[in-house]
Length: 176
Ligand code: ZN
Image (cartoon, rainbow, N blue to C red; front, side, top):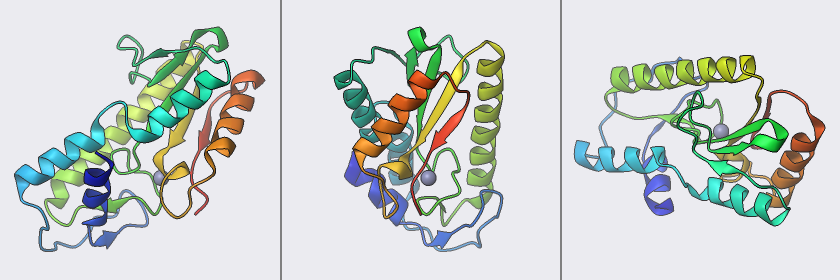
C-alpha cells in the first residue's frame, strides 16, 4: 500500500503552497480507475504512520480504542483515561500545507472542492470534540514520511508528553 500511496503523491506535478490555490490544468498521469484506487488507499484507516504510532504508544503502556464511529471525525485513537483523541492525518487528503501535499494534475475543481470539504469537516470535528471535553492531537503524515520526517521516537516522546500534560489541542508535523 505504501508503494501505491507514494506513487500517487509523487505522480502529481504541481506543488501548491496553500490548500486554496488552484493548480493549472495539466495532463493527467493516471486514468480515473487508477486514481480511484490510489485515493481509496490514501484515505484508508490503518495506514503505516498510524500503525507506527499505535505500536509505539502500546509499547509505552498507553491503552486506546480505535476508530470511534460515535465521536465527531471518527478519531483514529481514543484514550479515555487521558480524555484524549489522536488523529493521524494523511497530508494529501486533509490538505496539509507541507511538501507532501500536491494538487492532482487533473480534475482540479473536483479535488479543490473535496479537500476543502475535508478541511471543513476536520475543523468542525475539532470544535465539537473540544466542546465535549476532549483533548485533540493531530499527527500529520509528514511527521513520519518524506524529507522533513522526524525520528519515530521523537514523535512518540512528544505524544507521550502531551498525553500526560493535560494540555489542549496540539499538532505534530514534519520539520520542513
Ligand atoms: Zn504534512
